[in-house]
Image (tube, rainbow over all chains, first blue to last red; front, top):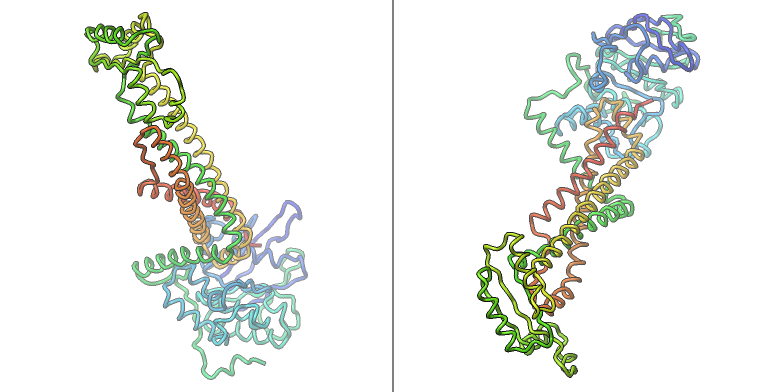
Length: 218
Length: 335
């Protein structure tokens, strides 16, 4: 599903941030991406999201080489992935429903299809009753679940989560992780960047550990 | 704790859509419908957005409306002036103002002489009395003139040259000949006045055109700058939309509609401003024209001109917005 082959990323100011990173995530696999801050976790995520391009090496997502993707096709690649962020990145002036509907509206779904899928996704994360609320009226855990609903509403084959539990207490974190495992069961590939060691140990999934830009464990 | 598993029913799992999920499913008409809905949604939500910030919107539209009103107002003034000159165009009449000491009998004899000239079609003598009566009637100075002891007006002979003489050289030669005769104190070719007036009007028209171009550029830049601020205010929204796979054109769409509304509403406001000013002016201009016995019909915007006014102001604003969007949306990158 996602393959890194000898990937390097160099910034002119800071030098090599990623050095010769290679790994392969199979479909339906969950992996944690971990490492100290500055180890290159967020760079890996940026490369997958095509916010940055690798300096050397290949990244293959769902059979497509990302280096060959033209700038104007980037949006279509991003639609194959659901992104989840530590700060949720919800639109505060839109309702929960509208936030979750955004990827579908962008992809050009019709009105009925949008309603049906948004309700299914909200049902999945247990927030169907809050569809008319605004994000700021919700608790942190609920906001993160809205973020997750938005990430899965388009049924992407891959979910990328950046510190999804960073702002949540252990109980809520476990709840979010349980959701991820449900998605994994139906074949979604999930990559979670996190430095929450206790959570990672509890979960017993594959761990990719970065140290100063190099993959030290996979 | 809000346990997800405690819900009364178990939601169906969301299976990934492995084949394709970069574009929505459904047939061509479904896509078309969704596309149309998106446009309709952008059209009305951008209008709603303008109304939700009435102060800012009023300021922007006010500035644009004034610029458009200035440009289109000058246009109307020129159109009205032009109307003054078009009625005069055909006249190549020559007026000969005779010297004061020339008697009426002498004048008539001189007029008969002119009639013999093969280049002349018609000759009319206006005596001092006639001239006075005419002047009293049209000038509005009737009472003042009564006070005068002596009629100051000269005898005038109006000479209408043959139409075949319209060629400039021959007409000028005829005019120069009249000028030289001893009876004539002052000769005047109406054509010269018409030409002068026409050249004034065409200068004014050029001025109005240049002004319109400058003010059009102002509309372009002001609309662009308004959209730039709007992009700045909605930066987070744009970045999030990009992260979930929005294309640049999807992101630009609502802003373009905002640009359209700004331009359109400014055009409508400008129309009202100009029409209002013209209504105020009309009374006094028509009074003035009445004094000169002129049949001057004040011109307002026609339907066609109104449509063009709105089209130009909307297009300029959309274009200004588009330029800013093209550059800025590309540059906005998620971090």
